[in-house]
Image (tube, rainbow, N blue to C red):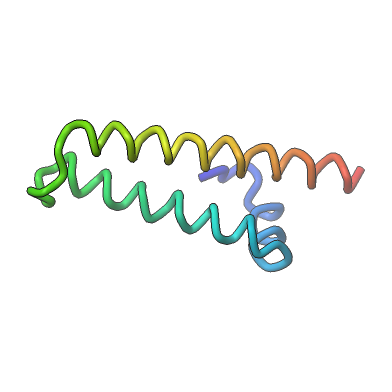
Amino acid sequence: MFHEYRDLVTELKTTNAHFKKIFEEHNDLHDKLEKAEVGGVDHIDHLEIERMKKAKLKLKDEAYAMIMDHKHSKQ
């Protein structure tokens, strides 16, 4: 996620506990969704998959906003 901001992401993950937490939560949801979509998880229904997708997007939006704030504060 956010490969174009790799350096900023690395910096934020080491200096901002909240950013690290939401980044890890996003990646965990990404992994769970990938498994669910290929049929690797039987107990996740369609509504739960949709809930997970929305939560993942919310985390991504929050992480992006934090990256942009950090980027602009460095200028």
